[in-house]
Image (cartoon, rainbow, N blue to C red; front, side, top):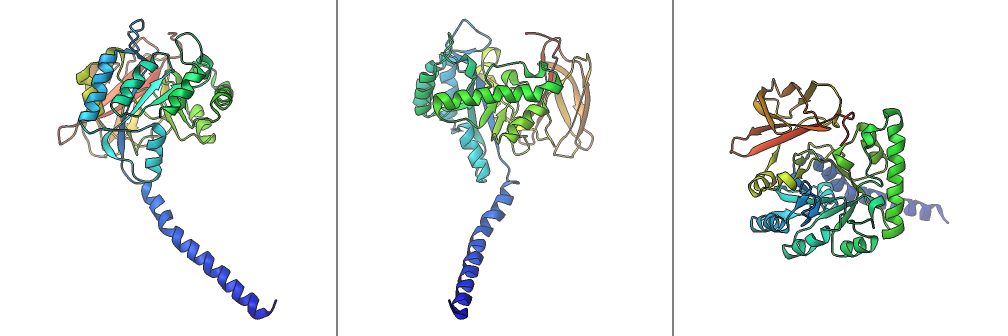
Length: 350
């Protein structure tokens, strides 16, 4: 090959590299912009449908249809959790008027809900604890396959549905990882793929559990403390509103799906403590001083005033395993913003 020919080949290769880099540049710049793009959506969680034996986790089919009808008639869009994750990645996640309908545990009664989801054109994500599949009152793998073909997303809800925070901290990460691997093996064996969205059993988790999911490249992980998923949320600690049992009232449902986020800096995992008094501290993204309503497990506490956006509040948890501390404030347009923090007392058994 002559020197002249080599020189021309080198110029052609260089031109290709420059053109490719030029074409990719706007995409890379947009990806940086996406990180700052605001969004929010409301996650809602159900368990059983039309099963009166378990009133605390049951939603009647009549109430479920009211929920879906309200969403449809008021212009809400539903997404599976993975679809919403893809929208976030593409910078196209909406500001409100959207919901993530999630269902935990994969009880057999979910089959009662599927026709209503189809009737109202709503999408949903079903989170499965794999050890229970096929047990009495739980869906089978064949049923889960069929449900998946109907467009219902299947997510990971652990293998054994354990109280992970009761495992000593020195052993917890290993214990959680082993359970996660068991669940993934079951999904691969029976469905042929492994979900990349996760729900913590009982909504209980710690930083080391979040770290494992991040290391395993999970896209999203959901808790059970109430709140609104936004760009300020930690994607491994996403809040959801319960809308079953005592939280099933229709007026309450309408308020929750229209809720806005009270945005905080650096979301942290639940507080694990058996103390009778617990300090809660966080920083609001809005650095202005404002007054927040404060509730501990639904009981009203004195209002809290933020100082330059900083909240530093001592609360007394209820004498139960999980105490939810909720902060709300009203926006200038009359809408409400919501944020909550979970306190877990591992000494209390359920």
